[in-house]
Image 1: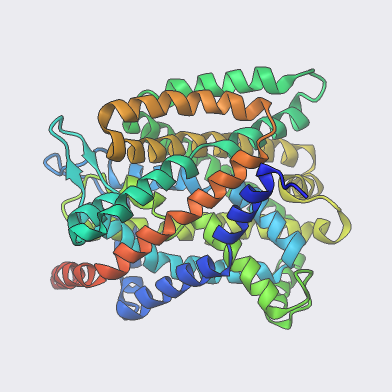
Image 2 (image 1 turned 180 degrees about the horizontal axis):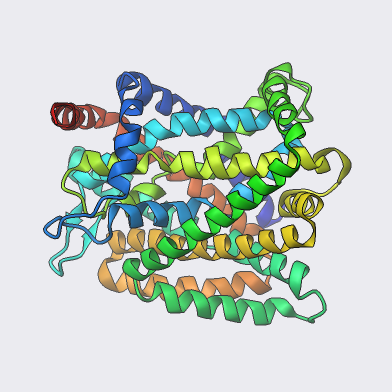
Length: 447
């Protein structure tokens, strides 16, 4: 029996996101935590102070520390935090949220190491532009024989950061929730989405960062604020929801195979997909921040999982659990989250979620364009970067109007592949991070 091309694409994506990747991400994070002696948590408050401090004019870089964080968050706070949490609960039960929290805590250490290294080994071009990321860490920090890993990361990044899933789902969600009566809305919507993306991303990282700095805090505040209102109105159900998460995390009665390990693996997988710690994407933008010391940006970067997983994902989970839709509805993904918002906040809740989904989805698409373009710049130079941007804009329209199962599976698999060179280089150069950290922490403690 002949197998379709999508069969092999599905096999690739499934193998790429298999248990080996989960163990690599979690194992590396645990190593970073132990190797740092958990010291980084001592400087969390300092990290928040850096986040809102003004950079010095003579600091090299493309964007401020705050812009770097919001741009990075715009790539992680999106459909994964809204639809992914709902999917985790419907497939693996409430206990999966606990393991998403564990993944986020471990991811704090991973982001500290990977993003510190990205600043340490970034490059300045002859045109004065600065680029960072795992490919430059490998090129400038590891022996020359390891250079193929840098090319591997860049190639995987070009493919993995194409907006197949985001474009398709954003148009589908918009059409289903707001324009269901318009025939062939995906054609019109795809053109509009491609046009909006082009206006933003052709302006480069600085324009993307400006948009992200506006959208992410605003939409995050609206989303979290709506959750607070809903939970205050249903305060008696909040503690039982938290209790359910903790109990279900260990009793193995969830839907995912009915086993403890089923809940654990699925929760960790969704958590890794949510905050992207160890994938290397976050270090592409953190690596070009205007900072006087690489450790400073590593500290800023490690606050990311707090915002995208511990806050936004928890808000989504509580809405779903408190509303009870996870037990009564057959819906999954963003539709399940929409039902929760509508039950707890009425039609106004559905409107809030719709606006947040659109804004988060757009910001993710904008940020991924920079990720992929940076990888193209490493492989093919300035021309390759510009060509990739135009190809990226065209792909948005194509992904909006055609079945894209193969494209999504290939992109998902390639995205997972980015973790291999990212974590190899971070583990290899971890002593360099600790050496720089000891000097910086000593300076902070003495002030």
